[in-house]
Every structure is written in C-alpha cells, then in structure tokens.
Image (cartoon, rainbow, N blue to C red; front, top):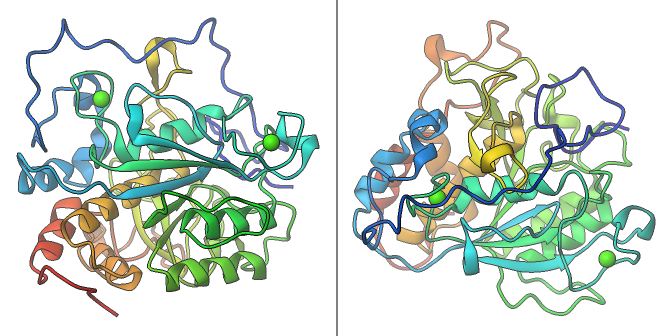
Length: 379
Ligand SMILES: [Ca+2]
Ligand SMILES: [Ca+2]
C-alpha cells in the first residue's frame, strides 16, 4: 500500500510505510519573538518580520509579499480553511485561530487513541507534524517569530483523517470532507465552523490507484455544490495523478510541486488532472516551516503536501476580499493568473505537465480585487 503522506526528508524510493520523523531529543517551541516585539502593525504587512521569512523562498516564488502589500493594514473577516490531515497540534503560530475539528479515524487499530471516531482530533504519533506544518503554511501569524503564513488572518479547522500509520480510509475521508464543509454526517455532531476551503495534502489508501474513488468523488461534488473549494496535493510517486483520490477527482484543484527554479521535482505527480504547481521543494531544499517537532522549532519538508497549502492560503486571501467567489471562480482565478513555466513546461517531457503554471498570489489577488464586490461571483 502506498503511503498517503510524504516523509519529511530525505525522500527515499517508495517506502513501504511512512518513515517517522527524525527523532529529536525534545520538543522545542517556535523561536520566541525578539524581546517583546514592539507593537506589530495591525492588519497585513508587505514584509513580515518573522525570522524564518528570509528563508521562505517559497513565499517569494509565489509573490506573497505583493499580495500582502495589496492588503496592507487591512483586517478582513477570517476565512476558514479545513486541513484534513493528521489532526490538531496546538501552535503558537495560530493560537485560537486553530480550531479543533473532529477525529474521523474509525479504525481503532490505527487510531492510536483506543477508539474510533470522537470529538478529540489531537494528532498522534510520528506524523503529527504533517497537519501542523500544513496549517502553518496556510495561516501562520505574522508576529515576529517563527514563520510567516499566507493568510495570517485565516482560521484553520484541524480535522483528523490519518491514523498513526499515516494512512487514510476512503470512507473516513469522504465523511470528513462533508463534515468540514458543514454537511451532515450520521453519528457526528454538526460542524459549528464550516470551512470554505478544504486542504487535502493526502490521498485515500486501501483502494487501487486506478482512478477517483466513488465515495470520495461524491463527497467532493457535494461540498463543491455547497461552495467549498477542495485543494489536493498531487502525491509524490512521480506518476500521473489521475489514479489518486482526491488528486484525480473532478472538482478538485490539484496542486503539484515546483522547485525554487520553477521545475517539476522528480517525486512530483503530474498529468491532466493537475491544475497548477506551487512550491513543494525537493530533497535538500524543502519548504522552511515552524514546527514544534523540529530542532529549534524549524523543519524543511518537501513534497506536494506542502505545495497544496500554498494554493489553499491564497484561496483564503481571495475569499477574504471577495467572499462570494464560487469554487469554479476560485479555480479560474488561481489557474489563469499562474506564472507560466519557463519555456512553457515544468518538465522536458511534455506528458509530465504541471498545469497552467506556478501559483502567483499577487496576480490572483489583483484579479479578484478587479471583480465586483458583493454577491455570489462566478459560475
Ligand atoms: Ca478516536
Ligand atoms: Ca510567525
């Protein structure tokens, strides 16, 4: 069975199970702000003072600073992004903006908490970092410590779908999708904080990689009809992403990885189901993030898992300024404003396509701001 989540680093060839984190002796908090940082400005800033920002090449690659400059000084209604992943890890980068969702892992043999589904989505085991890091890429605070996230005003709903083995059951994923978007799921209390964007840096295990699983497709279609955008990582097998769920499903914004040079790293899935690329890095040059699991509170993972939340974070910025955007309109904005690949392709092999280009936060936000404010926008 292929692993649903990528390892941190380096990327070994097709491991049978997910490798655990490189052990660290202690859990260390995010580096503290330089002595009680003098009054950080309210609202967006074009250049965050977070110490890791200088190393966040991924944010420069997508012109995040240009997007923030367009929002300078503004405080917008928070957009909720659900991260369906390993679950909830308290984060100094998100504080109360990180909302514990629900534990959808139904198999007690893989849940690590001794039972099936329940109200406690706490991430457990060696892969707990995965959801934590993705939440940080979407929404880490611009607070003078640690990393900068794409939408520091977003809320993240942490929904647990991966077991301690890093594997995801298709029915758990399908139910979690519906619940995260505010649709009813039998046996689960209603979600008090439905999300407009659902980030899936994973794929369903226990099914053949031959196409979109019908349960996952039905859930994706239902949440799309409700107005939620599904963003998925393309997966890390260097293969056509069409066989994967959700990457190969309809109505999914599938995101593959680009290197800093804007090319396809060998691990990154490709193909017609890929909408665009975003920085996911490569072995030895990953995406720099805050993590309580990392030495000094820092990790540098690579993989399409870390590309997808760039698109989710930018989508949150678009919804913050134009709340009426439909999933189709968000997809249109993100893909048509992407920066074309050098020479028109991400890979010398034209078959190995990466969609319309590399995510461009500034261009996407400019295009959204050019749309009329107000009611439901787009198809
Ligand atoms: Ca449980
Ligand atoms: Ca920060």
